[in-house]
Amino acid sequence: MIPEPWEFALLALAAFRVWKLVGDDAVLDRPRDALLERLSDTWDYFITCPWCAGFWITLVWWAAWLAFPYEAVVVAVPLALSAVVGYLGVGIDSLEE
Image (cartoon, rainbow, N blue to C red; front, side, top):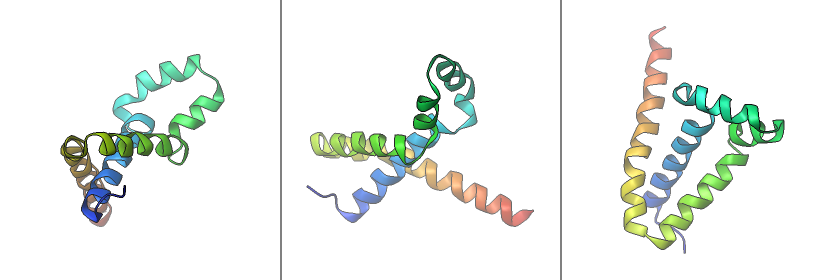
C-alpha cells in the first residue's frame, strides 16, 4: 500500500525529524554520547548517518502507517511541522547574515 502524496510528505518529514532528533540535534548530545561510548564505532556511524538510521526510522513510520494510518499521520503532523519550521529558521538566519 502506498501513501497519498500528502501522507507521504508528512511521513517523510516526520521520519527526517526523528532521525535529526536522534542522530544530530544538540538537545540529545549528552545521552547520545553516553550511549555511543558503550557501543562500537559502527553504531556511532549507524545512529548519526541519515542513510543508515534514516532507513530504519522510515521503515518504522511506514509500518505504523500501514497498521494505524490515521494515528500515524496525526503523530507525524507536529514532527513534520517541526522539520519545516526548523529549516525555515535556518534559511532565514542564513539570509540575515
